Image (cartoon, rainbow, N blue to C red; front, side, top):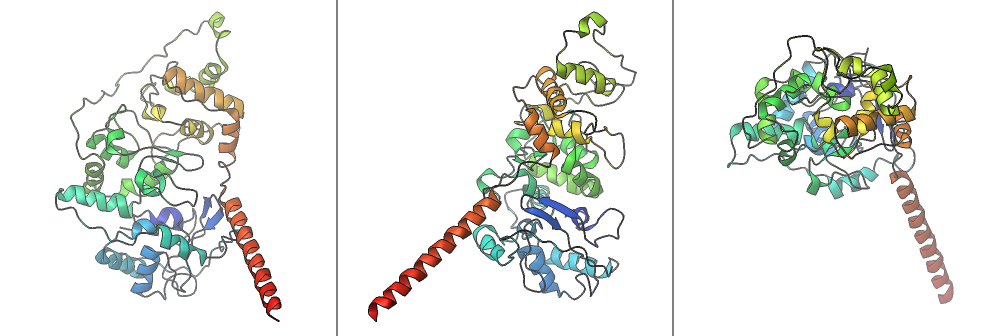
Length: 410
């Protein structure tokens, strides 16, 4: 369950002991450092009772009574049963080595450094209901629902949020920007739409990061596959596919090429002068792997009909160009963050989206620049400070009025 919950992704920093914390999590409000969740009694959760562990996991309340930030997906873990919480507690207390090192503390700017404010946020948005099986659905469907809604916390990325950073429940799993990468719509209607998925394709994608419809994982999803989904049981991956695709139909899967594919296209020098900037960048940097028209080359991924080109934003294509796509095992794609300018990244992204993907979605150099810097700044900080200033102004006026009223009675 710790694997399914992807606990290691946040609480294990590369090169350090498992679950010892210190991983820097970028949020719209600043950097949040993950805590040590080893059974260390001096730096971790070794003194937590099972009840305290459950409160942290499902309610976002630390052992000392203070509030956790919802970067910890306790709003999803609230779905966990008492039995599974007990099993997780036993694992972290007895199956994890204690590490007596306290990671760097989170220090968000005012007013978000006041953790007690999260109690009001929880009152407004947190749902502490444990998952209740649907008797009208199959055992596999219910297992998938339990995983998607709870442990694997899919809505954390795939559901858009309101201005207070709470998930919009009426748009559950309908896709959301993570600041840089875009987590696509994974509702059944979309998965069975233009870039058609079957349960087998989806289960294969969760296991490997690749699917027969051409989909390839990148960014946070690739990390989740490497560290969590690929290590889950086939039954659990199939259950997730059953829940996300409650109805599916047979689709012929494309044959895998077994012979070398020649580079196709007109490379005559006289034809190159009329190329757009995007096509020039593509030919110089991408065609050697993806072929001149995006058909794929020698087993490397095709861009034609790739599901990423059907998205309502071009952010994921631009992020793949900037950062590359590197699974823990298997072939990867290099990033061009240091070799291509914002204008060149925008140009090649638009070429891939429009000329290869036949999409009307475009991206600007300014947006690429924002992606390169980590995404747009959240307005929540300004909203909070303006709100607190307004509240302070009201309080001062109220005190002034009260003093004046008292003076009039003398």
